[in-house]
Structure formats: C-alpha cells, structure tokens
Image (tube, rainbow, N blue to C red; front, side, top):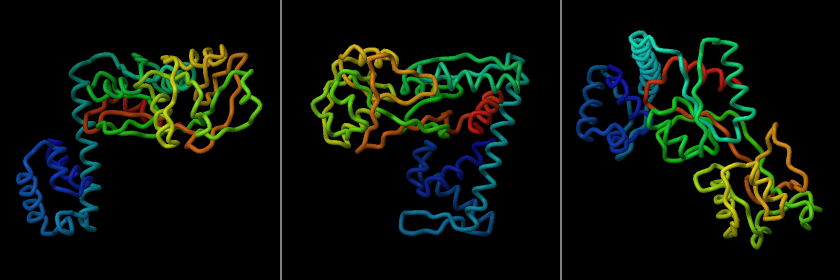
Length: 289
C-alpha cells in the first residue's frame, strides 16, 4: 500500500522523471503516466515544467508534505503488524565505530534503557563503510558513523561535530608549536587508519585538498593504537578529540589549519525501509541528544 504514495515522494525529491524512475526501478513512461493520471484526478498540476526539469509548485509542495506523513504512518503500521505477529524480543541492532564504544554508545544505551527498560541491544563494531553496508542490507537497524556516507541509500542525522587535531611525538620539533598548516606535512610519515575507516577518509580528503600525497608508514584499526605508535616516534597522525580519550605520555596535540579540521558524527538508517519500532525509539532519543 505504501508504494502507492512513495512514488510521488521520490518524484518530489528528485524533481526529475528520469532520476525518479531509476530510483524507483520502474519505466520512465509508467511514472509519467502516473503523474498525469494523478494531476487529472486532483484537477491541478503539481509541478511547473521547465524543459526536462520539474519544479514543485504550491499545490505540489502541499501534496508532497501530506504524502510524506502518510508514508511514514504506513511504514509504522506495517512494522507494528509484523511485531504483533512475531511476538519476539524488543531488540535493536546498532552498529558503530570502535571509537564510540567507550562514551557515545554507552551514553545512548543508558538513556534508552532509562526510558525503555525492556529494550535489548545487539552491538556491532566495525569500519564506517562496513557499518553503512550492513545498514543498507538490513543487518543493522541503526549505525553511528563518521563522516557522512556518500552515495549510499541511507538517511543521516548529525549528532555532533568533533575537532580533529594533529598528534606528534613529544620530542618532535613540531611539538613546540601550537598549530600547523596541513600542507606543511608534505614530507612527514603518517600513522593512519585502514581504508574504509572514517578517519582514513578524512586524511585522504585533507591530503587531496592540500595537494599532497601522505606517506603512510603504518595502518591500524584502532585510534588508541594510532596514538601509541605516535608516542613511539613512528610518525604523526590525525586524531579526533574525544571526551574519554587521554593521549598517552610522549604525545603532543596541535591545531591543524588549512583544512576543515572537524568531523561530523551522525546516525544512519536505511532509506525507504521500515524501521522497527524499538529502533525508532532509539533514533528519537539519539537525535534529541
């Protein structure tokens, strides 16, 4: 039933018949006929036509907003029926990056259990791209990742923004400075997270923006390991500031200039799929943080 309204929601978002038909996986003429039939039934156009582009007019915006609410209610109704039929435990499958396991995720679970004591969590920790893939596949209800996934069919809500700093060995000449331009690191050896992790993506993007090729000597899968290797004098690294992370002895942090030295942390869930009622509760608590 919800497919009967979803097609218009998608068309309203895309404002392009070709793009909307591809997203809906239906032939373009079929979508055009649906729109024409709907406008005839309503006795009003919903889009202004400008060449091949569509632009929602006043009537279309009103209609789209009502259909978005209707779609959300239909999704919730389907999920409620499934849960009544299943009579299973109230479980939320939550995926997140390792670095959020000591503060952000425990805080969210604590708040959730205070509101819903019977709720149970199954947790999965991995790299950002793997968590995103699991959310898309339906293996995970919600994911906490950074940065925002690109080109993935997920919805995103930012939870917070973290400052990113450069960490260097305490004996390094850079340790006497308070800040450094990222382009000055052209010849330095980096300790980096492995490909697929959010901090690796941030390093790669910062390097591309500064026009440098980072010399990566060691790749890791834990931020604490990165800090330990910096303390040992193996190289320098970008690390996010965290309320629970204390840098080990032998490490100094500097502000970084010349790049966007922050990272967004956000909640993701599969776009266009029914989210179980327990997961919707957790989502509401997370975004009200």
